[in-house]
Length: 161
Image 1 (cartoon, helix red, strand yellow):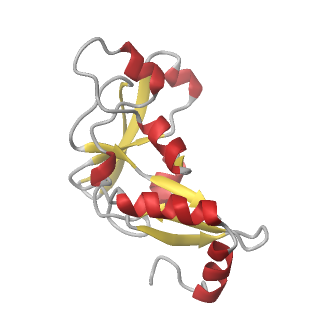
Image 2 (cartoon, helix red, strand yellow; image 1 turned 135 degrees about the horizontal axis):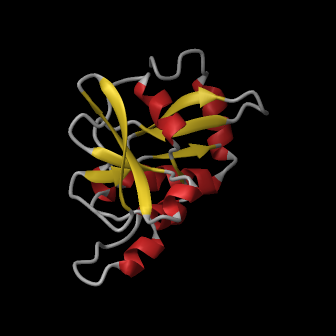
């Protein structure tokens, strides 16, 4: 409840019932281990923000590289997919670094895993991508080649309804 104090469930339910696409996206978040939860209510027409609140990067979204370009660049040992494409298919957005840091104020996430975050075009144009985690009670942002993938790195997403 601490993630959504002051938000009435009846309002959330009404918004969800009017958006089948949002329900489908939330189901995809849940099915891949994201444990989505309401974390904010925006000022514009009462829109709600859902975010993956699983303790670690969602298990069903790990071992993926950053985007299609990165996936296509791999000659061997290609992962099953990319974070950007998977998020688009699910109907959600990758968290930005700013959103990731805001999420970390609501709890301790990714203490054993890491999560790709939306990478600025200037970094991506040079072949890199950004990811974040929480270690030593600090939130860190790092870089890696966008084509890399690891069993402990996935991505977190958000959905505005």
